[in-house]
Length: 99
Image (cartoon, rainbow, N blue to C red; front, side, top):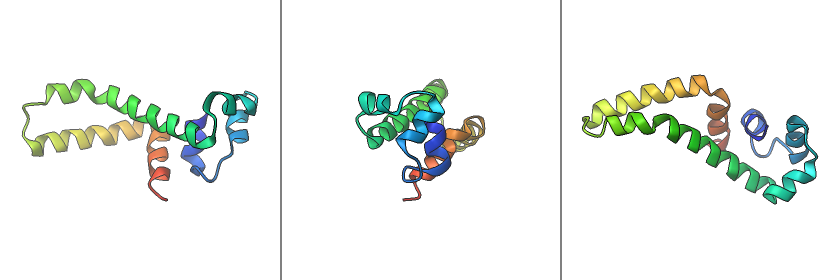
């Protein structure tokens, strides 16, 4: 729920209450588990990078001997496909870089 909300409106555009409502939990649980909206955002960012890293771990390992140009081309193409398959992560990254 946090990823979807942060992705659609950015950090400043969402409240922990809206995230809690989307997650169908009491908003006090967010404070209890994360302490703040910023900590929840950081946990969401960490999740995004963990998903992306897991997605690309095998591909990077199989390409360690590739030329830099080939490696960049393949990884960029794969990143574009990843963003298409995980639009909330893509939008989260865009929102995070607009500040």
